[in-house]
Image (tube, rainbow, N blue to C red; front, side, top):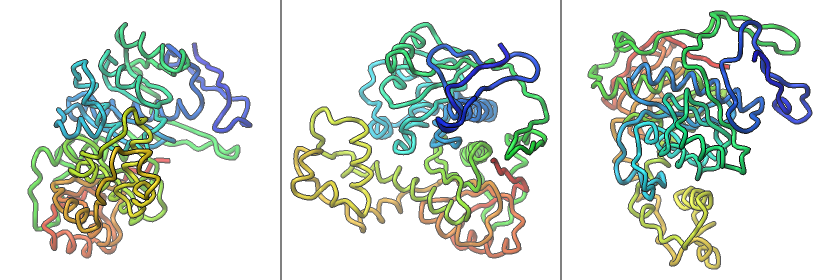
Length: 393
């Protein structure tokens, strides 16, 4: 099959819509559901991301995509009991396999943004992963294969309408890609830049020059994630998973702030007061996510006001004060930060430092590189100039 008709394009009024191959057959098989235009954009970008993460780290990888940018990305490193709890997977009886762990991490880092995601998996989707997917609000999944048990579970999701895509892992696209905008065809070479080499970190202009292996891994994860994130973009990574992604901002400092705020929220969700919130029985997962997000924000009264908190909690929780939040965030350390282009000013490093960043990889080449280096030196941050720009549109 070299063509697949779609219900509509980005919006219902955009008809007709299809995906097709100029030569050869589509490398995708629809096993369940009826995926749409944006679903395929998310699926194909997500697949490229996890395929590269697997190649770079040797570990199973997963990503959670929303509107053509990743909300989360991770490899299958083991999770602590704390992470299992804040990712809402501590009650899963099925042992979590490495690919299931990768998805739990990718989905769990920014659960608000991942709501209604499209999932990409580097490895065969197994029963444990399917059980995690089944309980989340999601549009679909793409993987190189599925076990029989996993496929049965996923085909039952959303009354059989859940989108399940199988992709040929050996498919390689043509080296030249094209697209049309306003009737004009654009053409370029595919971005085949290699982000797996240690030489990425050879140019280190800062006083601190030590990049431990874990930091190199996390920086590679950040850069590969950014390669498939709408620009401008910045990505914070810790322990093998993205914890904050800032995508599609016109100003780089806004990317850094947005991603940093998400990283802070990820860390605040591990605060003892959040971990021990007294939830009412059978509260919906989405309501719990939304409530946590508000509880740790400056708008906490929206869920703690009298007559309101009873909807969510069995007793009124204590406020998580601004001082407590600041002290807790200060305990987050050894975070890696990647940028898809150079930092024009040191203000990006100032903001990154507040979220525990200790390692940075960015293109370099700004007329204010000296200011960025000076700011890194002030905080003992190791920074590498990669010389690589990763714009994605």
